[in-house]
Image 1 (spheres, helix red, strand yellow):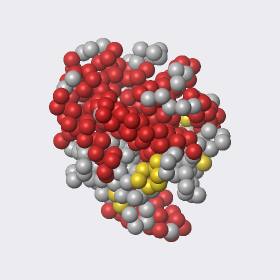
Image 2 (cartoon, rainbow, N blue to C red):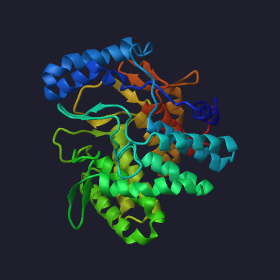
Image 3 (cartoon, one colour):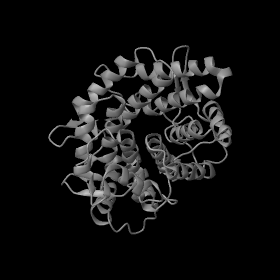
Length: 391
């Protein structure tokens, strides 16, 4: 099946509900075990390990006790994917389904906030005593629907999207919290409370402000100032070797592939909308780090961690490789683009089904899990459609 048919197979549907690698951690027992693990790693390690093994090796195909559900990020990436195809071949069906996905997003945004916004759509334990409830929007998830709406508006001039697009400015200004700010730098929250400082989250906020520039010509100077301060923060926490720690002020944090790729992606795409000083050097340094520290050249796949803070049964994950495929496109790295696309097909796609995880013994798991990470892969593939050869 060629790239185009593969994308159509997964994106041209009214219902995009899906199973997810996080299903086990959404159950009552999963929530309790994860809280225990965050409270005491030594006490929580055994039950957490048992649930992980159960999910990965016993219940991975059966999905007993789990329910498929919709995720805003899946709808947004499906819309973005179809619009990428439409720009190359303007089939009405692509725009028709992009609109359906955006309509779903508008009807299923987080409720009670200053502007349209979106989150995970499930309860997420992120510390021993704290849970993000399913309605809470995030700085990392909201950019995808915003980008989808902006792209659709530019293609169609559909005025009904102006109000939700512009409302995102209020979300950025009123709902996200300022964690730190001075004359040079700005750091904002991950969610809508003073929760935690996460590098890629601030790169997404920077990109959201950049997407809104054309919609607020009277606030252009103010928005440029916000972008500049957020960018300065990202530059300030890039390490000498080019890497970014996930949570830069947390001594127990990690460095992984796809979150690092997020930061680079958002710097590149922001720079396309507003020139960022020295961004070429910053990006090249970060890209070099990813190539040198994550790429397994024998398999031509990117691994998850260069600095880990927990044990993992995952050998390779599609999410890392999907984001690196997208980054190779943005970097115009045709050599990596060609090799990585072929390797992803060889290792993650079997009989038109997309797996997300290659576990430590080499088996492909988490089949057709759209959020993590079939849809990020298809989105990346839609960018490179026509640029890589499929055998």
